[in-house]
Length: 360
Image 1: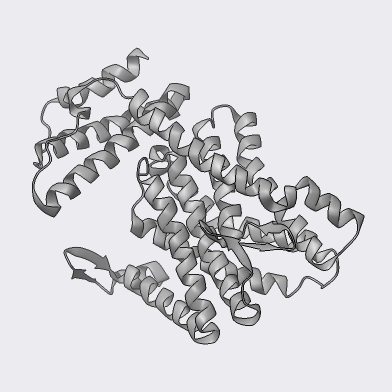
Image 2 (image 1 turned 135 degrees about the horizontal axis):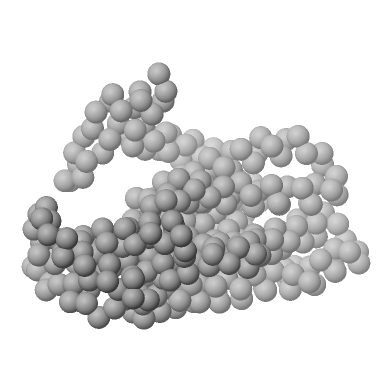
């Protein structure tokens, strides 16, 4: 019996109104053991590493809440996958000899492992949820994976060597000898930004591939320059770090990338939706439930805007599938506005978005 089928037989529990499946319980239990083992082995260093990773994610999620569609629970799952990727990197690195060539082999391997959970999530939802994600969503997925990956390494570094100066607003960074080390979370976040834009423009294949790879390539290069400079001195080490701007260029690109990602998503949300009544915000109801209904409406409206943007550049079957997806999202918005669960009996309920699709 496969693991997925085994966990389904575990049933589910309800906690504070949230249904948690057996598979989620197993995953949560494994993640708890993983974090506890890390904390036991690294002590205060592990606590600080966990805290700084959470602060970094909290900052990005707060900014991304202007445009994101992903939930905290989804990002937490990818955070844990990033930690699992770190364990794989540790095993693979054992087979790489400790020579100067190691600095050119380990960083690309780690960058690929960190982005792998994001690619898995995007591939798994390639015909559905991925089509409703904004650039901010992909950026946050990458940030979560990178933060989970880097947290383990940071915990052991802090435990054995302490931690030098860092940027106050980015505690995951490290400044040593004039060189700024952006860290795994920021490197992967930058790769996520370019990947997010690549997915939006996937109809232009060559441009999308170049754009999607650019963030990953730059992050790997900065990672290589840092690692080579740690163990080597001389002209070539200075050349690599000079091209990388001694790590500061990555921080500038990171800040620009976050701002541009959120700004572009805001453009799609507020500039792409037609002026139909079902897109107007519903009246805020009292209590926590009212806020939940409003937030769910915002999420669906954002998802619809992202699907509409992709529709405009799509063709053939992909265009038809996006039209169907948008119609479902439009119906969801109608449901949320009325706050009633109903089954449509007339096709006119989804006509507004369908008419819009075939008119653009």
